[in-house]
Image (tube, rainbow over all chains, first blue to last red; front, top):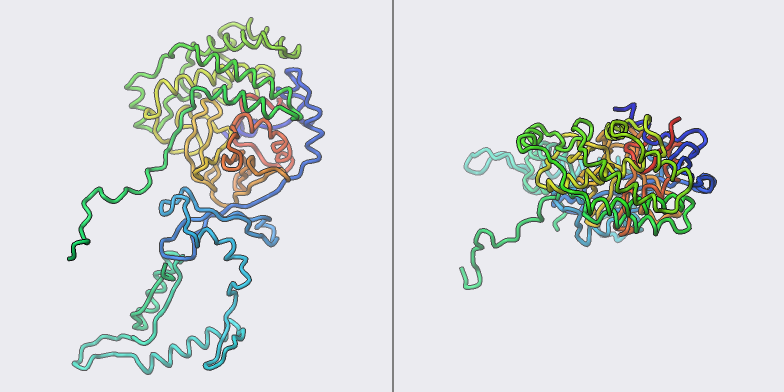
Amino acid sequence: MQVTRRQFFKFCAGGLGGSSVAMLGFSAGEALAEVRSFKLTRTTEVRNTCPYCSVGCGLIMSSLGDRAKNAKSTIIHIEGDADHPVNRGTLCPKGAGLLDFIYSPNRLKYPEYRAPGSNEWTRISWDDAFSRIARLMKNDRDKNFVAKTADGLTVNRWLTTGFLAASAASNETGYLTNKMLRSLGMIALDNQARV
Amino acid sequence: MNAETRILEPGEIEPPTAQIRFLFLADQDLFRLRAERLRFLAKGHSLGDYLNFLSLLADAQQEALNHLSAPPLPEPNEQALCREHGMPLLSASSMPLNPLWRKGLTMILQQMEEADLPLAARETITSLTQRDKTGLDEMAGRIMREELADVSPAELPFVAAALQVSFVRMASALGECSFGQLEQGGLCPVCGSRPVASIVHSDGLRYLCCSLCFSQWHLVRVKCSSCESTRGITLYALEGSNGAVTAECCDECNSYLKLLYLEKDSQVEAIADDLASLALDLLLEREGRLRAGPNLLFHPGTA
């Protein structure tokens, strides 16, 4: 099969000289000359999931540039994935504005910290953010963890902290989220920014 | 429970959107529409003369389709067998040739004889008219088995045109419900041929268009029709174009197929726009890409 397929459109070295166009007496010279003035543009298409809510609508995203060659690619278009069983190509107003979300000047790209009483946000490193969150979680858990109720029933729960995970997370991420947080005793756990 | 609250009965909620339609058979006026599109594209085009010639050929195909009598069709037991094993019912590569196709060829050649064509084209028509049955059937067999290297570039458009008419006629006589889905999403579920191009309909769904019977069947987007890979799908287009005609390339198997968007130009037509964008093929060949399916109205020449 492969062998014949390669012969479908294998132009001769001279271009269109041996093709149906020339063999039927039509001129092909102009078409060949014209090709030299044309350039190709290149876009890449990928599937993704809308990050907004737990409906999980399918997206097709197009980007300019070649992802394989280390060049920075730019997303130029996002549309609903018509093949996706959840949304069949449709998007809600928030999803339809995803391209603006990507290029929004207000988009949060790194962790920031606002001290109690202050009205200023300061940028901090991811390491600092993670350490701080872990420290505060540990402090709170140590203080408020309930191992047994007053009447001696074992409950092992931690009610004073909640966790918001991501709506576009995969099955595996969802599993890990639950595994980790339930083992800490956390009850308030959600996987989506509410619609 | 207050007066306004009531429980919905089954069937009261609108069902979700219907299933994705899997197959569209070619319309009965497809050749007329194609001829119109070819005439439109020919204006000011560097291959204008050839596109005009093809528009006459498409007119002749329409005429032949209108007058061709009903062809013999596979028996019900054959149909059941094909469905059971997921085989194309009108398999171009294995089915015995339907003698009616030569009637179509005669009609097409008769019409084309009257047209104002270059000498080489007229000579090709004359030589085809004088060819005997066996010779024609052999050539048809090679085309249907996609052995295009052994077919003369001048004769291919005429002979393929007649086969196309015959397959469109057979497919429409059987009707859409006769055909089931194949395991290989890249082959025509009606005749097993390769697609000439894919078309994204205005609802955003992609359909592959058969190079022989012009049936359109559904294949999810961002997927190579040739190796079914979903990684590294790149779209090439000519710079400055409106983006209605692109080529979908696969980095896994290095093949490509044109991808046409009805949303960007509601008049695009698989065969016509594929040939009018031959420049894209020439440029992609320089990039080392291989085309995944033939356009039977054009032979690139035997190297």
